[in-house]
Length: 231
Image (cartoon, rainbow, N blue to C red):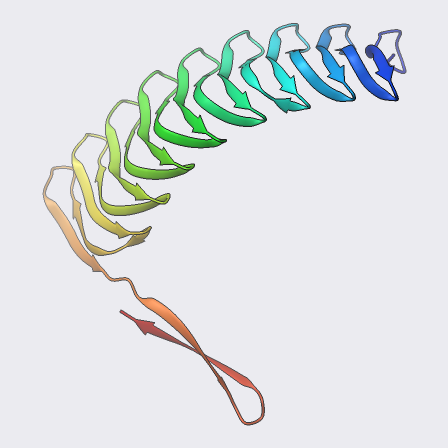
């Protein structure tokens, strides 16, 4: 029971000093908080969770305290929030998410707990925000981003989660703003900027320098560090 009321806080059984069988927990206002089964002190089987206002919060299956199987979560207004599958606490397979207003926020797949393959994200007004690919949880290949009005904002490629190759950036009008090139997240080569009337504004050239640190030891035993830049 809660210390200052007669409201029950939890109810269940113990076996060998460990939670066992069905347990139920309540909020202070009397609303049920969660209920499910324990086996030898670990959550097993289906569990259900509620917000303090009575709306469903989460529902899914545990195996030895780890989420396993289909899980769904909701917002406190009853709108579904996330829906997908776990395998021993790792997200797997298709997952989808929604905003509080019911618009979809994301759709994609997980593999062993990491994002994999094509993913799609939306703004809360229903417009597409981003599309692109993941490999082992890292962005890989072509990605495109749009602003909230549906105008393309940028597009280009990633490799190992870093911008790589040519990238294109656009004004809010949809006109081309910048064309540039990256080498594993660093600017490399020519960058061309345009005015929003499509006329060329400027051209710059970027070069990557590699650094090497050399260490020399003087006769007195002190070490001297020197950094050299190589193209």
